[in-house]
Length: 75
View 1 (tube, rainbow, N blue to C red):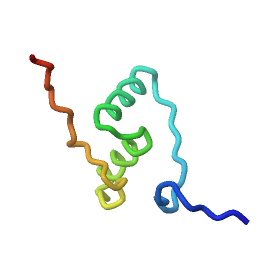
View 2: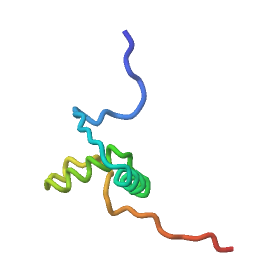
View 3: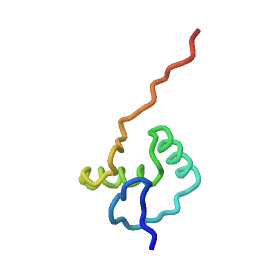
C-alpha cells in the first residue's frame, strides 16, 4: 500500500460548484484571477465567501486586495 509522502497539504473536504459563464465574463474572470495570482477555483471561492459574509472560509492566503504595482523598466 502506497502512502503519500509529498505534495501540498489538503485543503480539507470540498465540493464541486459549477457554472457556465458567457465568454466575455469568463475571460474577464480569468484575467482578474491571474492579476491577483489566484487559481480560478480560489478566486471564485473567495468571492462566494466574501459575498455570504463567511470570509473565514475563503482559501488561505487569498485576498482580493493584492494588486501588482505598475512598475516599468526604466534604465
